[in-house]
Image (cartoon, rainbow, N blue to C red; front, side, top):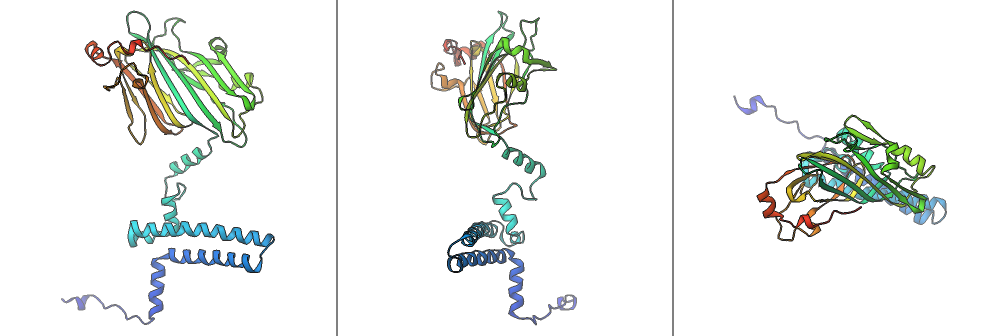
Length: 353
């Protein structure tokens, strides 16, 4: 059976060129939108220039023209993007989808969880320009089965909230794995918040902080809200003001163990440093989710001297709220310790914060 007997011939085009033009418009709705925006922008500018050369109407028309002019540029960019990247099939998605794909996380095609997360990030009241974590590892006792781990956080931040900001959520630290009586318990050693321009200066040590801490399962919590209510009553960090925030905790952990470092705010730069008299016998692995290298190890077989502080430092950029850095450690063999580090690290004094 021939093709002519089974497949009807297409109907002749009785409408002529206009039908072809309509088909082009249907396949390229972006052109219609772009043309419409161009007409509106041009009309607004012409009216502002000739019909209303001054006054409130002039200002309104100029604003309308500028708004549609910017929208026109974005629409054109989206249209070109679709044509180049997805060819004719993608054109059917329309310019709105293109704008969403290029610039937006709020487009309906994005997962709901992602849109909620982006909205949450956009509402962050503060950020840290630099956030530095220092982990100090020291042996507790001659058996070398218990490490005293001191964690120091120091950050330089800025408030971007119109209503100001003051820390309120509880802070927490892991409880110790070697809790023998009251001598080897997790403790908060220091808490500081300083913003002179907002008249905030909090500087509390171990004894004062004990009344604000309480155990909660495997964590020791610090009631930050009550602490600041007592030490900085009625005050907030004003919008646009810089502040310094630091805290220090210590805990007692096994010789093979790990701890999480929680990032609750934006950090433009995240620095990590390890120090202490136990480093000469330890291997440390730091895992941090990032676009670049996500794993950092200590010791590193570098040509530089182990006594150089940069040998014990790592740095990442653009940390977002909710990220977690995992720091784990274990003992190295004496041969590896001698060949890689020798006595150099032991001569490095612990950093005082």
